[in-house]
Image (cartoon, rainbow, N blue to C red; front, top):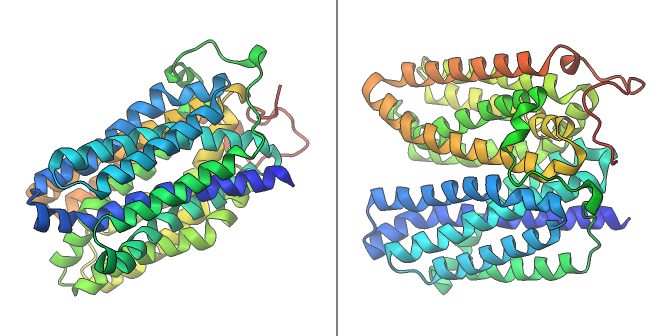
Length: 398
C-alpha cells in the first residue's frame, strides 16, 4: 500500500539522520588530534546540536500542523545535507560548530514532521510504526561508526559525511514522489507554538514519563565508560557495551510499540521506566563490571519493549491536528533534559561518587514517572478496551 511505502521511506530517513550523529561521535578524537580542538570545544560542538534541535522542535516544528509537513521535512533534511558537507570539510572550531548547528536545526524541523506524517498516515498501527521507527533510528546511529570505520582510512575524514549527504539527497527525492496528507485548512491550529499543549494533563503526564528516559540517557552518556574504567573493566567491555545496548532496541522496539498499543502506552511506558529507575540505582552499588554489563543488557531489553509507549501516549493525548507540535514538544523537552543532565552528571559523580550519582538518578526517574501517572489519571493507566471509545483521547481524524 502507498502509505506503507511512505512510512518506511520516512523511517529510513530518520535512520540516516541518526547515522550522522553516530558518525560525529567517532570523529571527536580525530578532530582533537588533527585540528587541535580541546575537550571543552568538542563538548560544545556536541551540545550546540542538542540546543538548536530543542529550539527548532519547540518553535519551528509546530508549522507541520499548519499544512507545512512536507516543506519542513524537505528543508530539515536539506539542512542536514549542508551540515554534513560543512562538517566533512571542517578544519576549525567554527566550521564544526556551524555544521552541527545546521544539523541540529534540520533534525528539529524534520523529525517531528516525519512522526506526524507516520501517525496520520496509518492511525490503526501507530504503536508498530513508531516502534519500528525507533528501531531504525537506533540502527542508523549504530551504522554511523561502521561507515566511519570503513571509509576514513581510505578516503579521509570527509568521506562518511559526504556519503550521508548523498544518501539524504536520494531520500528527499524519494519522498518528493510520495503523497503526503497535510492538515486541512479548517482544522489547522491557531496556536503558533506548542507550549499551550502542556495544559492537557495526560499529555503533560506522558511527557514527564518520557523525560525520565532522557534523565537516564543523560547520565549514561558521560558516565558509562568512566564507571566501567573505575570498576577495572578492560577497554573492550566499556566500548562493547555501547553497541550491545543498541541491539535489543533494533530487535524488539517494533514489538514494544505493538505491546504498548495493545496494553496501553501509559501503563507500559510507566512500568518500564519505573523498573528502569531501580536498575539505574543499582549501578551505584554493583562491584563487578561484568555484572553491570549483564544487568544493563537486561535493562536495555526492557526499555526496548516498553518505552516506545511514551511517544504513543503523547500521540493519544494530543489533538489530531497537532501531532507535530506534540511530538516536537516531547522531543524538545527530552533533548534539553538530556543535555542538562549530562552536564550535571559528571560533576555529581566527581564530587559525591558513583553511588550518589546513580542513586539520585533512580530517585528522579521514579519521581517523574509517579507524577506523570498522577497527571494521566487512573483511566489512562488501565488496559484499553477496544469497545470503550472514551478511553484516552482519540487520535482518529476529524
